[in-house]
Image (cartoon, rainbow, N blue to C red):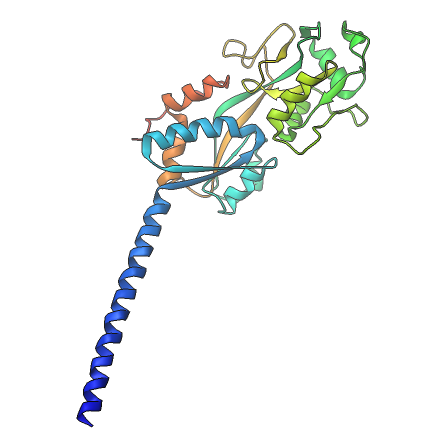
Length: 285
């Protein structure tokens, strides 16, 4: 009986030893996981937001060591993912209806994103009046000849829903029967817009200023292009580039927002032809 009892004590000591080791390993894994999450940030946004979000993210990571994951999704998806807590930050150039969001949601405009009309470089037209733009968007004008160009039918490249919706509100509703062209494969809206306008001489596309390719031409509207001197009185076709955060910003989310609003962050926005906003904060790090 004594031998059996001693064996039980010995086995209990072994079990306790392994239980303690497993506890230490699990606890270490938990601490490591929490620490890893502290060094990560997830951002979701539509195609129109990705170029600026990525440039801000790269600079933020270099400055703070926090890894930033960018998720490109459909129009306004970043808003909904943020308020549901599926991502840390949502970014959007879509009009944000604050009244439809949960109380306490943070919505902060970090830049103004100008919308431009781009055409093929072979297109002889360089400027359109706002009246002509409205007629083109609505479908009243269907041929470039009516605008002083060649006798070819206009093909519209309106792939970026957020950009199209916002531009239409400030000009004219998009005509239901206008001729549109689309990429052969589902493609990133910004890149596909550039590619189609480059490929088709008769094409016209809506694009975010600064995202246009080298092989397209920007049309002036009433003789103006967007910049800080023409915003917003002479050229008023802009989208709010907004950051959306569930609740009050804190931790890495707050640090990223502060960075975007800092002089450094605003300079990055300006490098992509976005218009800086007045509010400034100190950059983190």
